[in-house]
Length: 451
Image 1: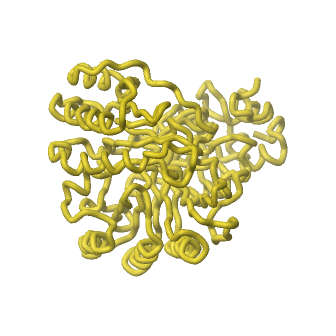
Image 2: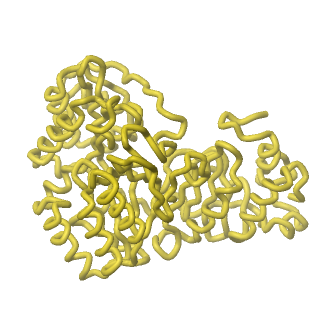
Image 3: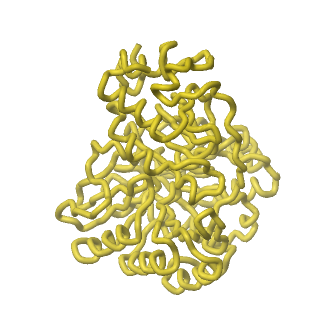
């Protein structure tokens, strides 16, 4: 039996037969198996972590295990080289030098002291990286097609639509009551295919220069973007005034209720098929002078950001375009640059690997993640996806991965074709046991790997 992702029969044997890792019955592994692989007894339940339900922002830093983290959302996802140099210096001098590129195209600087975290908003605002009014700053958060204005296949008025939505959100004071994770997006399609941007309310380009608003599974009739922007804000205001208990992205019924409140006629939103791995698969040369550099596991050092800024300033157009797929796109390039630590090879297994910051950085994580993910990535079968999570929340990759390794008090659990909160099929005592099992599969075919 072959998996849909193209994983080989040998790996299915590794995961699914009664004598190996993928034992579905949940029965206790025998002592000889435990001795060879580090698989312990019953797989048991892993503790569910606390879900805070909010996102840090410029004026709302968050305390983590490695200090305070601060987040900056560059306007429309674009960072000038000078701003990138500044952030790299601040991260190095006031934080621990670790910078995360989030799935909301934000930069998250880690390891700040409390006083430095309090000072950071003033630094960011002075550099043009935020608004001085905390409410307005919070409301302007939105995703925009990263290549708008650069990719000929992206709707030509994407930036104009995004600016109109941004201004409308800034001016709608009532939307400060939206949940912290409530998101907007302006999707112009193109190389980053239409439908890849995910949000609670999306303004999406349609045929003929028209735009529609998508909320849950419903879509408005195509109209000029000015009309779509008004509808998007109206839906958000209806969400606030009707006191919905769930966001549209989480509950399809919410979209129907909001459409009804506004008296909007909706139809089923069109499905837009993008690349198999979404924006993650777009690295290296994209054409039109664009080069995408992927940030491994979504985390880079201050030196890596500084190097990207240097390339942008000396070889490109001076702009770093941040994507929600852990990559930075540089424009005006004549060749693919070499930036230490960044990925430019579309075949790299790290593009199909996700990991959170893990223990030592997150209070809820109970195991090391990043190093384990880097070690396991080369052992992945072709096309397979891997998620290594420090707890059951699975923040780094909320979707289902082919293989998920999740840390718990008892060791590392193995979950197949599910999220980090899925059913644990096998349990490993430590990182070495996880690696040994994956390595045995890779080198011995897993048909008879002693598991």
